[in-house]
Length: 183
Length: 275
Image (cartoon, rainbow over all chains, first blue to last red):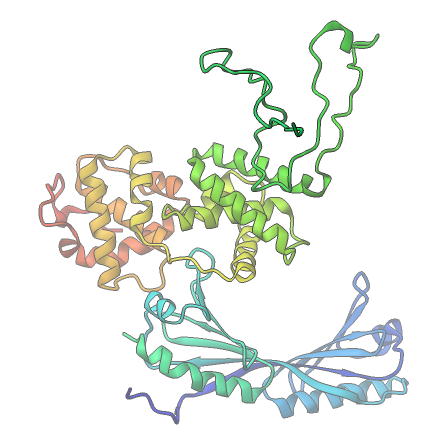
C-alpha cells in the first residue's frame, strides 16, 4: 500500500467542548441581571454567557456546573473556562475552579482525493454505516478510540472524539482505509 | 389393563364435513412462535339473545386480559399487518417483520422508543432483507411516525441485533416506480441501464440512489414516446423535482453513453430537454 504512515494532512479543530464545576451554588438571576453578555433561559434554568476573547459560549447551571463550547483548542478552552470562572467570581460568588475536563473535540480534515462511499462501506462492514436516504456521509465508529468519523464523498472528513490526540489518531487510522477506496 | 389416555381428537372429523368448524380444535391457531404461549381463554362476543342484558349491552363484557405480558407485542403485530396491507406487502415480509420485532422487543434495549416507531423500522429492515427495499418515505406514508424517528430506530435496531443490511441500488426501485408511472417495459429497462451506468461511471457522487433513479427515469421517459414530467416522477419517488433536476444535470452530458445500445429513440438524444 502506498499510503504514508506520516500523514501531512491539515486537521482543523473547529470546536472543543469542556465542562467544569464552580463548587458553589450560583444565583442565575443575579448573573442575568449583573453579568455582561448573558442570555437567561428561564424555562430551562440556564444562563448563556458569551465571551469575546476566546470566542466561547458557556452554559451555566445554578448547581455550579458549566459547559463551555466554541473553543478552537484545548488550551483555549482552559483559558476561556478560567476567564469565565473569574468573571463569575467578580460577580461575588465563591468560585473554585474544579473538575475541568475536555469532553468533546470536533475536527475537520480534507483528503486530497474523492472517495467512493459504497465501496468503502462494503470493505469496512461492521464499523461503517451508510444510509444515503438519511445522511450523505458514511458514519465510521472507532470503538477503541471512542471516536466517530463522518466521511463524505468529496473527501472531507468530520471527526468527533474525546480529546485532540484521539482525533489525530483516528484520522491516521482511517487514512489507509479511505485511500483504498479513493477515486 | 393400565389407563391409557387417548390424545387423539374427540370427534371424528371428515375432510368435507363443515370445513369452518373443527370440533377437535380448542383455542386459536395463533402462532405460539411469536407470542409467549397462547393458552388463555377469551370470552367471545355472544350469539343468542340471552347474552344481552336489559339495555342492549352484552353481559360478560370483558374479554379477559389475555397474555398481558405480550399485549404490546400483539398490538404491534396488528399495526405491522395494517401498515403492510396499505402497501400490499407479501406475507413473508410481514412474518420477517414480526420476527424482527419480537427479537428487538425481547432484547429490551429500545424499550423507551414508541412501539410504532420500532415496528415501522422493522418493516423497513424486513423489506431490505428480502431484497425489495422500500424508501423511508414510502414507509412514512403508511406510518404515523416521522422519517427522522424511523431512521433513528433503524440505526438503533441494527446496532441492537448486530446485523447490517445491503446498500440500496438504483435497480431495486425501478420496477415499482416505472409501473406506478405506467411506463412500458422498454422504458423501464432503459432507465435501469441509465442509472446503473451513471453509478458505474460515477457521474453522481454523493447523490441518493433514489434521486439518481428518478433522474434516469426522467431521461428515459423523455427519450421515449411516454414522456413524464419531473413533478410526476418526483411525486411517485418521493423526491423533490429540484433534486431530480440536479441529478439530471449531472447525467445529461453523458446521455448518449448511458442509453442501452438497442433503445428506440422517440426523441433523439440531442433533443432531450436541458434543465
